[in-house]
Length: 242
Image 1 (cartoon, rainbow, N blue to C red):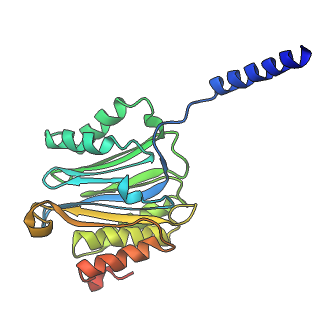
Image 2: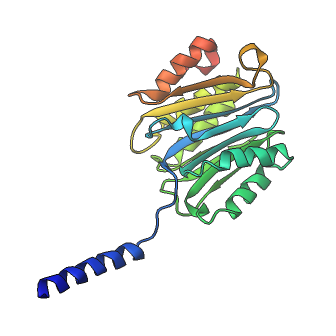
């Protein structure tokens, strides 16, 4: 009887302890670095991302021609993608979309988000509980963001590479990813990378807007491999060579 009572006491204590623990947010933990950008000359919107995370391209990047582009990451809320594009399509600015999405999310302090709207305005959000180093850096027609990074210099390197590179938007985004990786990237290492660029009638036969949609889901050198694949579609300009 004493043993049975002790077992019940231990079981009850275990259940109480589980009940007291903070509940983890829904969604995968996508520590990563990304860039969301716009090219006014070609009317293109794009997202580039790299991470120590399997198939990051299936989760982070969202874009629609004439509407804008979004990167959603950290304790990723994938609903930010379609919801954000719907808000952008309704005429909301990037800043308004960031505000509306995060204010409606009770887990916003572990989220990270970057948005560029139809006019190229950029905005971002990094929750106070994202894993350090976490933050963002924004410039004309682009925003870079990351969490669990080697340091702030990752985003600084990405921003400089994007600003100082000429040529197609896809290769400017690629240059930013390469620079971010050289600066330390994701502290855990490397696994996957992706690039998405949209423009009106940019897809096969002009039947959709997906001009570039390449992913490296699991690779020892995902950014390098992504650049190789991109080069099969678009020759790499001299100005973007690392």
